[in-house]
Length: 142
Image 1 (cartoon, rainbow, N blue to C red):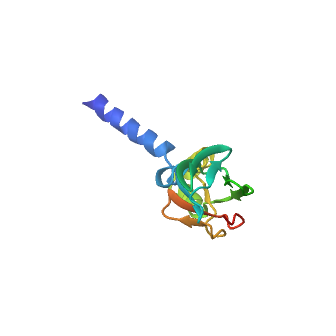
Image 2 (image 1 turned 120 degrees about the vertical axis):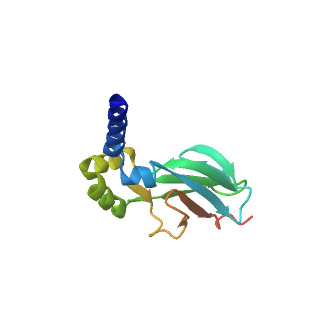
Image 3 (image 1 turned 60 degrees about the vertical axis):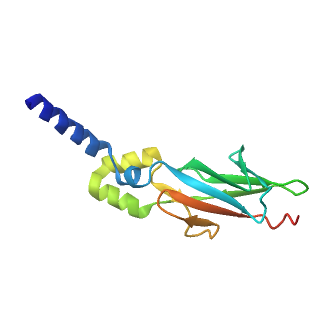
């Protein structure tokens, strides 16, 4: 019984030591829905990989900008880069709750970042883990 309690205590200690606010409440990846406004036939590429047509859903790393390219027949391709931003509130909470270990975990996993929905109206935050990216492809007037 004594060894069992020591094992449980050690497991809890490791869980608290290597957990952090950003990893627990946002993760190192986010779910992104990409919708090409008024162009259901437009092909969607993210970071060079085709992921859908008209609209697409995928998981993307938080610590890198999202580069989206849309193409439609008889139209010029359009490339948009959606920047990310630092999650300041997450950083402060990780520092207070978990100390330097929590901050290191968040920075190392990329959980300290999010798409910059405050400065880009084409990005809509649905939750901490879900974002909607709307691509305006009005240059293509088919």
